[in-house]
Image (cartoon, rainbow, N blue to C red):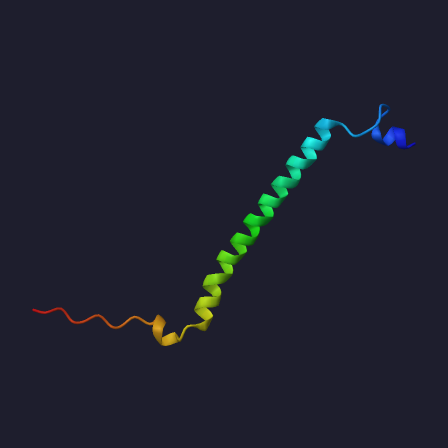
Length: 66
C-alpha cells in the first residue's frame, strides 16, 4: 500500500516537491503581507483614539481684510 502512495519506483516526484516548496514560499509571502497590512490599518486607529479631541478641531478662519 505504501508503494501505491509514493509511486511504484519509490520516493516523491521532484516536480511535486518543487511545487510544494514554491507554494510554501508564496504562503509565507502572503502571511507577511497580511501582517503588514493589519499593522498599517491598526496604527492610525490607535493613534486617533489616543489623541485629544481639541487637536482634531480646526481653528475658525480669520475674516478677510478689506
